[in-house]
Length: 136
Image (cartoon, rainbow, N blue to C red; front, side, top):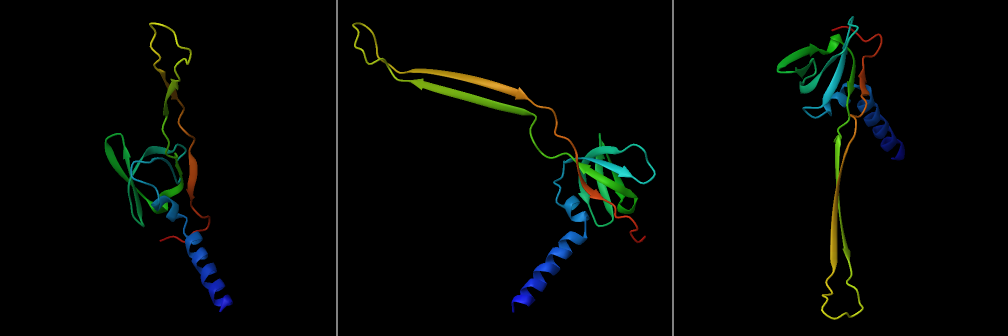
């Protein structure tokens, strides 16, 4: 019984690991990607729009471009993350306990805000065409 379970676990892992295109499928629409095509020295930069088993459709400025899967050598994606980090901090202080004539003893409150702008995160390789892959 244990060997059967082990067999199925290994088979499931092998099926998921066998297709590197699954990482590309997991990308959300609008993710910034860099596509390296066969025979081209410069990558194509755009945002992912649609994906099928045969084509990757990306948005370049205001146009859609379909790139056949067999023409793609590598795909890099920029991980999601905001460039702007906002922080607000409110501090409440207790009133002075010493009684003084003609003075209110109300708590004090101060608020500060901070905005930090970070650079974009680096691209990470999520797909690389296997060498010696069979042609379709």
